[in-house]
Every structure is written in structure tokens, then in C-alpha cells.
Image (cartoon, rainbow, N blue to C red):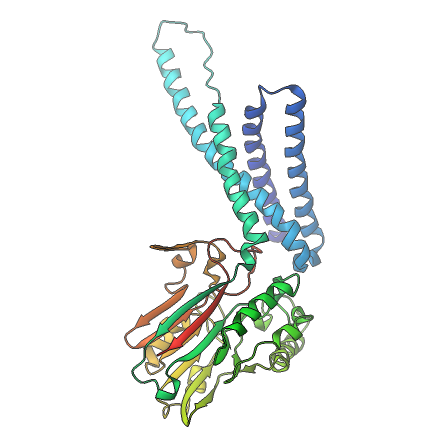
Length: 415
């Protein structure tokens, strides 16, 4: 019953906001020629019908929810239309509250006035506010549309130099390229990913690490991308871990065995790509006779995310290494366990947050809604002698784009 009730409530709420915002459109065109009024109203009606049709298709045909072309183009446009009407309605609500206050004030004055006691009180919506509501709503429309068409592929290289006193001399100047949250199930073609990988290889990194969420839900999303995956090359290797989406936890399965098989198939994808998948284990990285430890664990998350990872298992026998790097998908792991129990892990590399795929990053300002959920949500952080770097993600999920928080390729130089 709840599964049916929720979409009905959503539909009713959308319809109310749609009707409410339509009042602003009527106010704007009320002085226009009749034909122009009809044209504008027809266009508005078409946007409403479009949103309703998409909503019904998603509800009636569940398979469309996992169709990346349908969600990227059709659902996204319906989502943007809904956001525009919602924001425009919020702006109008401010004016209507003001109108209501004025109405009550005028009504009280009339009751205690002897002038025109029978005169009807009418306070109409100002055309200025209707225009303002449309303009106010148009800004996110253009922005969100840009985020889908361009922002999701506007790759940005973030560089950080990190100094460590205990870093072996042979590793001074080590260049690490760190990527995360690829979510290839959201890509409609290879071109954008090839562009990102070309940028990575142009950096000539010593080592490449990927910190999880290769797919949205299932290994089959990687079909058609294998040749691109194999293009990642580095002298000291390419290493990877699983993120929370890589376990196929968010889709139904007929049996646990089938789900486990899907996980095994995704492990094979990593191997076929030439990436060393770290599964609660460590590898020894050697350079010029000196060695460091690179640890990688399964997903370990707070706030309801699965805790599959076992850092104690990965950490075992690493005490002899003077320098340690950990790959752990969720940055909350650093807060809850790494910085408290494993204080000799020098550098932790994470992803997961996506920086919410929305925010502002300009000189002097770094903001995203993600900061209210994750204390460490993007960039470099330090606690005592330990460092954490949170990658903003290379791909996207949900909203098929990015705005302000662009897809990231991290270049870390250890000095």
C-alpha cells in the first residue's frame, strides 16, 4: 500500500505546484494579444503533459528506471521542469503571503472605517513578482541543463603536494593519480571516459589508484568499456577497491548466489582491466630497493552504509613498513576507525561523497550540501601526522551531471 501511496502523494504535490506556478504565467501574458496568450499557455501545458507522461512511464515500466538513456535525457528533463516550477512557486509564495497580510490589514481598516463599507477588497498579484518568479526559476533551469550537457564531463585536475617525514627517499616525488566513483552505468558512451583517461595518462603517474564505485548496480554496466579501462597504465601499477555500489546491494536478486556471482564477475572486470583489486589486503610497493605498503579494504561506511571491510586483516604484517597508504572508499572510515586505531597509516584515499555533484568552489569559498553530512567531503585533510584525501568522483549518479563540483582527477605528489 505504501508503495502505491507515495507516488500518488508526489503526483498530487507536483500538480499543486504546477497549477500554482501557472498563475504567474497567466499574470505575465494577461495584457498580451489573445493568440500569444494561447501559445504560451499551450507551451506550458506541453511541459506539464511531458512530466506526467514520464512519471507514468517510470511507474508503469520499472525497467526504464535502469535505462541510462531514458534517465539521462527524459527523466532529467522532467526533473528540471519540476525543480523550476517548485522554485518559482516558492518565490510566488513569498508574494502571496505578503498579499494575504495586506488583505487582512485592509479588511480590518475597512471594518473600522465609515468610508465605502461595502467596497470589495481585491489585492491582485503584481506582474513584477510574476516576472521575477519566472526569471528566478529560469536560472536553475539553465544551470541544471548545463550541468547535464557539459558539467558532468568538465574534468578538473586537483593537485596537492604532501610532505611526510617518514617517506623513504626513493619515494620522494612519487606521483599518485587518484580517481574514484566512476559509475560507468551513467555514461552513455565511451568518449567522455576516454577523455578523462587520456588526461590521467598525460600526467605520467608513478601509480594509479581507484577508490571504488565502478558501477551503479551491476557488472554488466561495464560492457563496452573494457578497452577504455585497459588504457590506464602506470609503472608501479594500477590498484582498485570496491565501493558501496559495487556489491549490487541496491537492486533485487532472485537469490543470494546470483548476487554473489555478480560480485565475482565485477572482480573479473578489475582483473581483465589490468587493475590489482585489493580485498582487505596489502601489497608491497618497491622502488630503488625501498618499500612502502599499500592497503586496500572493502567498503566500510557509516550512516547506514555497509561495513564489509576488515582493516585489521589488511593491516596485518605491515608494521615493518615505515610508510603506509590506505584505499578506503568512504571517508567516514577515516573518522571512525583509521585515525583512532591505526595511527601509523600515513595517507588515506577515499571518494564516495561526489561532493554532492553540486556546490560552489571559487577562491575563498568551498561549499556543498555534502558538508552537512560528511565532515570530510572533498580535498585534503590532516589530523596530527595523518592525511586524508577525498576525491570528488569522476562520474555521477542520480542527477546525470554536475554543477560547481566538477568531476575530479587527483594528482598527489609525495615529498
